[in-house]
Length: 200
Image 1: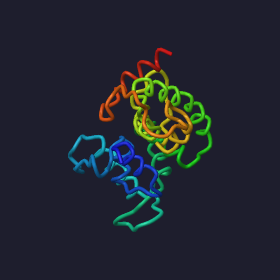
Image 2: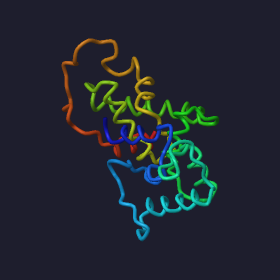
Image 3: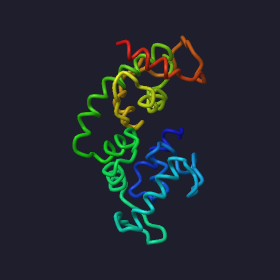
């Protein structure tokens, strides 16, 4: 699983701890990108964690599992509380969580994003005609981070893969194409992709 996929696995958990929340709302993986928590640090993760801890101790946050020493909370509740109090929550993480849980108002955003992902896939296939739909989907999972023309809803790699089903130069064909333009190992220049989409 790539780094992006690992992050989303955390996002869609049923519950978050305060420490996990403090990392995730800043788009950091609590395991791979763990920040050492210190009450004297000015790091955004530390500031968020200690603010949430204080809110919990004051009875403004209610845990749904665990105990007072290791409480776990609904991710939606934590993000709403942060937003209502004017604290930062990554829109990308928020969009992905809402889309994964089918929250009202997000379906149209996801639907409107579908043509953009498909167009992006077609651009990738022009440069990498031998890439599978699975490989292209994994690359596109990171696109919202670089999309500058408008906001683009983050969706799961599985959703992108469903959108690309039956598409691509090798759709319905067996085996590999005879003409291979670029090595499988060549990375995608996602900033180039964003520029191409922005010029459309």
